[in-house]
Amino acid sequence: MKKFYITTSIAYVNAPPHIGFALESIQADVLARWRRQRDFDVFFLTGADEHGAKIVRAAEAAGSSPKKFTDEISEKFRNLKKVLNLSWDDFIRTSDQKRHWPNAQKIWKAIEKSGDLYKKIYRGRYCVGHEAFITEKDLEDGVCRDHKTKPETIEEENWFFKLSKYSEKIKKAIKKGGIEILPESRKNEILSLISDGLEDVSFSRPNKDLSWGVPVPGDPDSTMYVWADALSNYLLPEKYWPADIHVIGKDILRFHAAIWPGMLLSAGLKLPKKIFVHGFITVDGQKMSKTIGNVVTPEELVKKYGSDAVRYYLLREISSGEDGDYSEEKFKERYNGDLANGLGNFAARVLALGEKLGEVDIDLKKVVERAISKTIDQTRKTVEKKVNEFKLHEALSAIWELIGCGDAYVNEKKLWEGEKKNEILNAVVILDNLAVLLVPFLPETSGKITKAIHWSDKKTLRVSKIGVLFPRL
Image 1 (cartoon, one colour):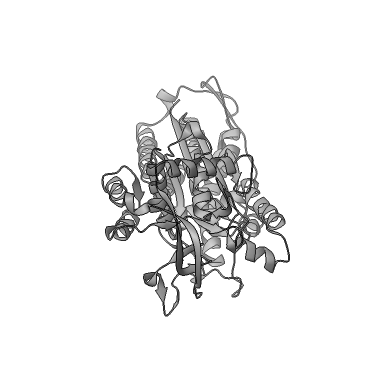
Image 2 (cartoon, rainbow, N blue to C red):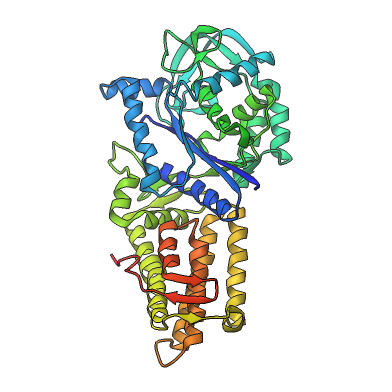
């Protein structure tokens, strides 16, 4: 079996999950399920990034300790597996001293062995939101462009990583496809950043100022920089490295496409093959904010509409790799139009007609019309192409075109009139193929449809009616 190793970024647990991370998790889940469906040996890793000053401050604000705080929030992220019907194989926590810490310290030692770490006193602007030192070009009117907060001026003795040493190698790898970055706009963005040369990176904080983190090997007075610690999580399933794809948000591209490749090159390890970068989700055109009170959580959406409906909206409404918007109105439009009146209605009609046939012996080669066979085959090829291009919204669009074809066929042939056994079987075949195509996207719905279409030795067919898949809102 050919291996396929996919990761999400590990979620920063300073706050509970919102639909932005749900989008990332679902996109990665589709890619993992797609490869499993094709008999790949898939390993899908996700987890929680639990260290850093931002976590300490969030815990203090909540009147809690970092340990208790991260235990509670990380459990909410872990629970997304059930909430969103995810299929990840492992969930790593960076506070796990048995599994993660040895891994983080191992790559530190490998970088140190390459002579790429040195200590110096450094004074600079530190953005707690980024968990990083930032420069003048990251500021706008004296505040961080991304977090709208004024950076703190810090002077301390830190370990530094010679990232500058690897600028040209990283640039070459990205330009020539050693690391493929998608979409193309993100590739251009990181190449622009690297074009002036990468600067060395502060790789530690004094333990007296930040003890919540992984200790620097051989230096108990220093704590590893949160990103040096966090990025190493991807090496956990050693036999699967290098990653076939990292799925990340656009705000952490620099860390994954510049610092992480530099660390790997220094440690003598292979680079990840692809980095797929998704956009942000706004709510009714506004950035999600606790202050505004417009934060949408996966749990509340799934409770109201079901996991497949949430998966469908995020995958179809939001173009893969681009920013997107959530609104209750748009969600209901997609739900009623595409799910209730589209897939749900088509499945209900076909299964009701199929059930009336009873048990049927069927030779597919003789029964399935050539035009239908050709349409199904073309849809399958289009979906495969779009998934491989990471255009998941377009893959779903192609599947919904097949639903439209199926509906048109039922109406044109008036399958509810008279004895139309072969035509009904053609409609069942369309629905059966739709269910297979939907496995990675809407796994629960797909399973219900497949269960209703019983094949015995691929020759005998019995169809059963099922309950309403998507009740109209």
